[in-house]
Length: 428
Image (cartoon, rainbow, N blue to C red; front, side, top):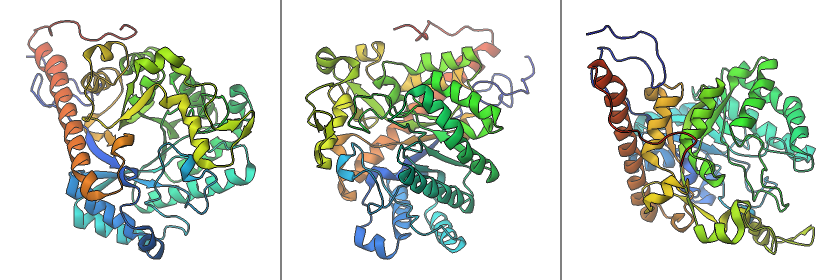
């Protein structure tokens, strides 16, 4: 029997014994925006860190071993009213005042008491906002998030890059170099990695623009990373991949991962959000993948409507043909997998191991709940739903880990080929 390889590759470190069966599942977590108002607002206002303690206890109750701690501008400070957001954000981590060592100690005590860990901190906002004052407020909060991550011994922050909607995409690359690279320098100084979720955010503005975040796909990721490399912060720029956004844009995960490997950038994806997207074929027939382009009700002519609830109609660019999936809750026509109209979760997790530069046992898989019909703000009602979705995510990843170990380690060590062909990149 050949001796085991000592060098890690796709799928992580080699097995301790050649051909032994040792599946390596990923580390499960959940974004606390899954239940924004777990702690009543009046109690949170008086004691901001109570929200973190109660979410840690809730995570233990539903079987989440880790949380992705959500931060956002306080509702009184945000430039985007909650009524205009498709998926309202959560300021579980309230940073109106800086996070202090005492606050960190309290949070860490709650983590020890509940046995729940911390995968990363998340702050999802437009870091390239056109309005200079609003942008400064967002950057100030992001720096506070960085500082909180350090105090909580967390090595990563996840968020968006964003876009200045008043200028073109090429001009946004220049703005990224001027405005965003300094944030990455601050992350580097603190020993942090900035993980970008790739949502294109089509309804973020009432304009007709679809790409309201410039870091939406592998092509832009590579362009942005090259800018980062020129400034010595390439290691700080990584991707927190969410397959729901790939489906939204007509992509499939295997082809995305293969493209990155072909280009030498398979290292960019470091962690994953677990959230699906279900494409409505009738909506595609009516509007195509550009979504509803006219008569949405978010503006009168070129003037945005004053009522934020009416500005919510800008999201019809997305919602007329798609709906977010909470993993495990949706029934899929198998043909949808072949048409890239739903996430094939098993192949997604298998492809990640086959094509990306990952150590699965150190890779977080973070459940994100944005299924509109189940976004209830009652933990008694929502708890069993999230528990079931977490169980599904854990089981599907364990199945992929077993398949990878069998097909890429156990069988090859015995000279036995795997059966069949499976899904192939660039082919549906």
